[in-house]
Length: 406
Length: 228
Ligand SMILES: Nc1ncnc2c1ncn2[C@@H]1O[C@H](COP(=O)(O)OP(=O)(O)O)[C@@H](O)[C@H]1O
Ligand SMILES: [Mg+2]
Image 1: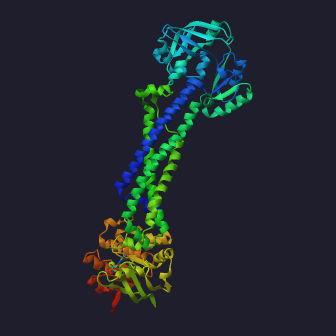
Image 2: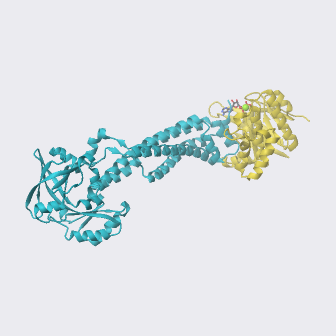
Image 3: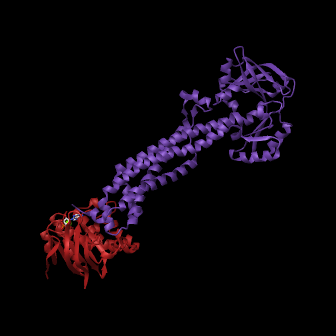
């Protein structure tokens, strides 16, 4: 019954309640949209980082990672790759030669990482080939020898186009220097311009031919069939290959791991601040309501409504008001987020800056479902906290004074 | 048997600054089934006395015995419960909960008392019929006239089966026809169901209906007349 009265009381002054509900709705919508953009941005950064750059797990010779010296190869990489393919939850594996070198065009030269890959295997693990626009060639299309796939940033730096020749110069595992000309077959453009600037892909078969030797495998990359299986696969590989360094993406790229954790906290800080601000509005409104209903509350106490019931009634009314606003806010936000998610938000006006940090200029905002659960709890807490002061105010009323008619 | 006995009751407001002696040594007793009016000019202490009787305010001195219990000795929590179980109130205005219908308003106290639903429904309907509002059970207060609202308040006051009903100027906001109508209903309930009413007023036509008239002046009883 207290429940019913409290609920009906919310609608007594419709305009005022709607103003409070609208304020909560707008506040939450603003907060949730902001959060969804940030989440979308970070998810995309992490996803594109995983898909284009690091995969889920990588294996190296522990010595290799110290100085990236190509002589520290993974012995018997082929049979290791076969074993990895057999591990449950592993979706695809690829082997890479990784050498440090230089790329030069008639115009300019710069230091690069040269990746000798098997294009077919590479495509099963990485989606970088999808980051090559239709007009920018392909990922080792055609049967010609000495093809190279480079990033847009590097192409710009070297002032080269499709089919241009560039010269790659690198040190082989045995210490000799090799130099060879390659023709640009594709130009990829990932979200991370830094990655695009320093990574150069050639076929391992070409690499081994021009160096007249097997350059070995410095890197094994693999993906699991699901993100949630990464720890499992990692643990399995660690025990199978104690001599190799097995790392997941967040270890290989701590920046990506950190941003994910940082954002998870930041999201709640943003929403917490918004709810805190809204709480002031709610407290103020409810104090006004208690003040306006002095006589009615006095009458209720006079006829036998106990203080604890009066307290509960005001508490409930405040909580209802907050929850209604919260539900409206979350519903509006969920709708907006899903609309923005399907169209995406183009931030290319600012994309130069974003790309340098590995962020995609087109953002697909999104909210993790569990956020709505946690947010609901936060909203209810806000309601409870906002209710205490007005409800206590109501308790201070004395029935005689409240009903006195001057 | 007296259901209420007031002994040497006094109330002083603003004791420390400029003391106002709102009640000054009042002795009074009420019997079951009375229909009594407290009259007197504005400021004579009528409201103060009814508030004391209803346990809404604490006296500065004296005793109020209700059915053998001295209510001046009760703690505020006990007093709330005592009021709910023993006393029906009708105020000058703001009697009803605006968001509830007439029926729900009457039912409200019974719900506080924990009366079960079936009984509540039955009694609510009876009460609203007895105040002539059988047709208006699902109407909200703002759709009722002032007189109808006061009649709902009377029904509400009766709902808890109180020992007596206190009404402080129940007709003050009503036109004369509604006032007369309300008094007739109160009189009928008093006559047919032996319900004790104590009401204050300064309307002479209302006073005329009372069977006993207690007159206050400056916080003292100046006359106490019973008609037969
Ligand atoms: N809360 C209060 N504080 C100070 N004086 C009061 C208060 N309530 C009533 N009084 C004074 O007590 C006297 C009696 O008032 P009241 O009982 O309201 O009279 P009535 O109901 O007969 O008009 C008046 O002089 C009034 O001014
Ligand atoms: Mg008065």
